[in-house]
Picture 1 (tube, rainbow, N blue to C red):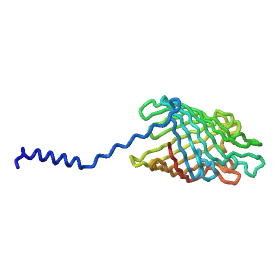
Picture 2: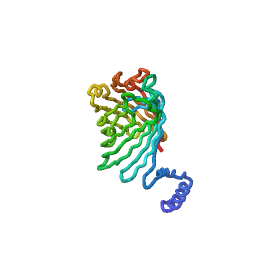
Picture 3: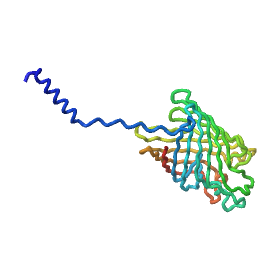
Length: 272
């Protein structure tokens, strides 16, 4: 067979093979855009955890936690969020004491602000945070209602962030006349390539600003966190160890347990 005569046959065979070949898989559909309210995208998350750790302190005395958060984020950078969790630390501080009845089983947080992405991977974050602890406060003695308001300023670059929070309410999580108390937080969340694994590290410093230097020394502390997280089918699983150098006299609850010190926590979070 000469080459010119073979061309029509080759073309026919090629067409037949192409017709029999399986079709290329269709591209995965793009995820649907989140719902919006007045131009604000609505997102949120739910979390189940072995305990609730806040600034190195267990808020549930080592017991499980259920948490939820809703976020409204505008393309301009403004945002507003509400979050909730079960807690026990308020009640635990007064169990068996003469100060009661004092009890609170829920923490509700309302926060909002403005996040400015001023350069590639860089952002500034400015806002207000209000911590609510609805409950029964008949007699607090020398302590104060734990409801607290903070102003914060943060800067982040890629997987690193630094945040400064300052109490602007009169009281600070039950410590009376502590306006000006502060918390400095350095957090790293380093992704391990495309594996879905993230290494987490954190260091924080709590400083109290009361009229008593002895109280400030007793309650001030530093906390640390080291952990790892993995995203699996839309769920984020995280395991972390935390430690706070809290003094027993300042942070023992009514059961004699220091709510800081070394702890290990496992959480499962689902974003939506």
